Image (tube, rainbow, N blue to C red; front, top):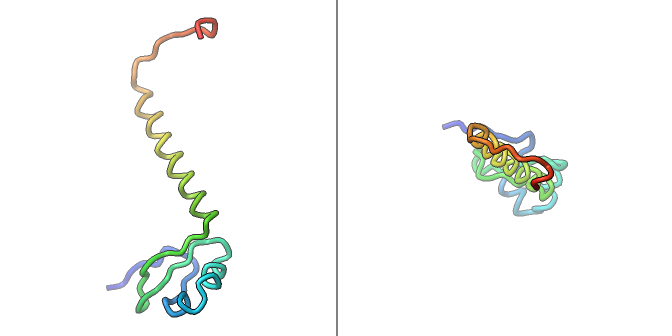
Length: 82
């Protein structure tokens, strides 16, 4: 069964075993799909890209909280009361 490769760069398990960092660096900062028998087994993601992805997911979670709370009744407060 065909599997989509969700990365612009790909390498084999054999390449990963030979030189893991060379495979990761071949993606030039982007995720690299690691293929096993021409099917993606997993993705190598550089630390910077992973941190950006986690920040983005956290922003999405916070945006959902804001969206959920928009329908709640608000309480008027002046700056002097704070």
